[in-house]
Image 1 (cartoon, rainbow over the protein chains, first blue to last red):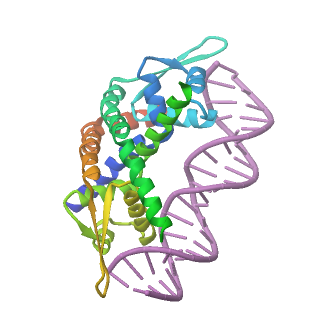
Image 2 (cartoon, chains in turn blue, cyan, brown, purple; image 1 turned 90 degrees about the vertical axis):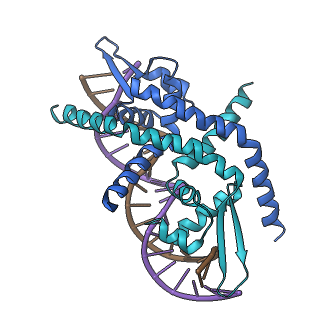
Length: 121
Length: 121
DNA sequence: CAGCATCCTCCGCGATACTG
DNA sequence: CAGTATCGCGGAGGATGCTG
C-alpha cells in the first residue's frame, strides 16, 4: 500500500533527522556517560544556547529517549539521563560517527579535487 | 589537544548532518539500486524541487559520494551513481533506518504519553 | 533534458530579559 | 538553577523564468 509506504518513510526520516540534528547528538553523546544536570550539559556542550538546550531536551524527552528528573530543592536541580531506548541509539550513531572519522580523509580529498576542477573551469 | 578534538567534532558533525539531511538520504537510497538520471531522480523523490535536487547532487558529488556522468547528446542526459565511498554509507545508514523502524512503536507511545502528561497539566 | 539565476517567504535559532 | 517569553535576523528552500 502506497499510503503505508509513505508513512513509513516520513516516520523514518523524522527519526533520522534526529541524528542530523546537531544538538540532539551532542546531548546524547554527553549523556552516554551517565546522568547530568541542566547546567552541566550547558557547560559541556560548547556553543549551545539555553533556549536550544531546553528545546532539544524536551524533544528527546518527548520521544522517550531521555528521562527528566526534578529534585524539588532550592535552588532546583534537574537531572537528565538516557532511557534504555535512548541507550540503544548510541550504537548505530557511533557506527556512523566512526564511518565519518574513517572516511574523512577521502572526503577531504574529494573536496579538494572538486575545488580544483571548479577552479580550472 | 583541545584544538584537534574540536576539529574532529566539527568534521564528524558535518558528515553526520548529511544523514540528517532529508534530500541527501533520499538520493542515496534511490541510487543504492544503481545509476539514475536527473529526471528519474526528480520523479522518484516525491516533493523535491529541481533546485534542491541539483544542490543536493552537487553536495554529494563534491564529497565524493556520487559520480556524475554527462552524455553529450541532444537532449542532454546525465547519470548519477554512487561511488564506492558512497556505497559504504549505505550500511550504517540502513542500520539507523532499521533502528528507526524497530523502535517506532515505542517512540509513538512515548509521544502519546508525553502528550497526555502535558494535556492534564 | 538538465540546470543556473533570481526573487521572496518562512522559521530556526540566538540574544535578551523576566520568573519560581 | 532551570527554565519561559519575546523579538529580530539570516539563511534554507520553494516558485518561476531563462538557457544550451
